[in-house]
Image 1 (tube, helix red, strand yellow):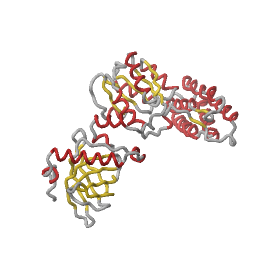
Image 2: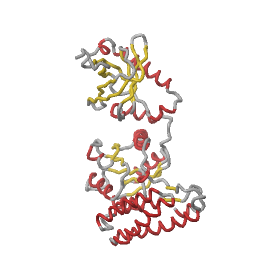
Image 3: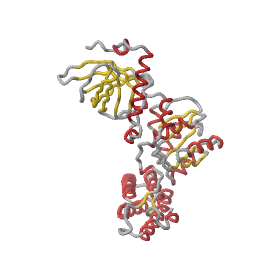
Image 4: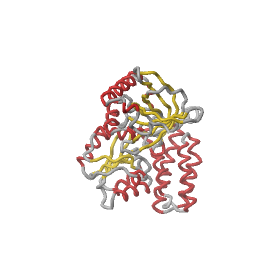
Amino acid sequence: MSQHNDLNSELQLRLRAPERQSLLRSLLALVNNEYRNIHDRRKHNRYVPLHTDAIAELEHPGGSKVSCAILVYDIGSRGIGFATRSYLHQNTTITISLRTNDGEMTKVQGCVNRCEYYDNRFHRVGIVLTEKIDPRIYVSNDEWEQHTSRCDDKSWMTPRKALHIESDELESNAIEMMLSNAKIECSRTTTIGKALDAIHTDSYDLILLSDTIDPAGLLDVLTKLQSNGYAGPLIVIASTKYSCDKSLSDLGVHTVLQKPVQLKPLIAALRDIFENRDDVPNESSNIYSNLTQAQCTDEQLLEFLRVTKELSKQLECCISNDDYPRALKNCNSLYSAGAGFGYPILSSTAAGAIQTLNASCSAQESSMELRKLIRIIARLHPRENTPGNKEVA
């Protein structure tokens, strides 16, 4: 075993706190200068971890292993940068013991992709991680929020729709104003019943939910939203302090924000949700045909969409009347024609509804999949800038 088996290591013993901070600042300044104006950096943002001292275990080609102390200054979803006293050969396998922001120890593995002599005493090392990690668990909330507020990359900010379930009008107005900073249009409902009616027919990219909206309790409300077909992200706005535990995350909750909600943590949560999100079936954006004018005229598309809107209305009646035969017939029609008119997502969603209908022989028991199909139909449009687009909507 190596003598470096805890944080009372060579790096820590031979560096006083001011020296360690000075080294950390110089490394961060170097990183910021290197990646200025480089677009690739924005794809995998890098952060300063809350706990910078760590132990790395190196595996040499002969199979021997040795541990050394490192100072981690740069952490992202795909890589880590650190300083150490030893030179590390490229492609060396390395396992790093990292402490999370709540004190838990974790291990991440990767391989060395560069090692440079730095500051007369140290080597500056970069590794590529074997598996993607969530850097947020190693970063303080302040660091995370500050990075969001100063980040130049706003590409994740595209027009979206949110539903806020809240009985307090002033609070709802404040949330609506803050969401507009991220190009999110917000609608409000005051009861869970009205919220369920809204998600049956409209698509939302996000739901924000007050934890006091229903006396039955938060978990019951979340379960109702999920069982009625909402599959997108949720933010709980809490009047009491508690964390987003597994019982909440399993029901789609991304984060819990404490009242009164402030802009910076809300924007940070929105960026986390939408930065790399690609969930077309559960978005609110328009869906356009992938066919060209030469392949299918605007008039043909408009007529097709007129028929699908009619079938969508019939599906609502099928759910109310539990009309299984008509529901199945309509879904089969949508499945057969959707991809042919340039809407493959319509065919795939109809296929899911057909499968559920065949399994249950009941339109009411298949209501979740049928309403998903209804919401998809509501988002269908011919082509961008096509005359008559607004009429179809």
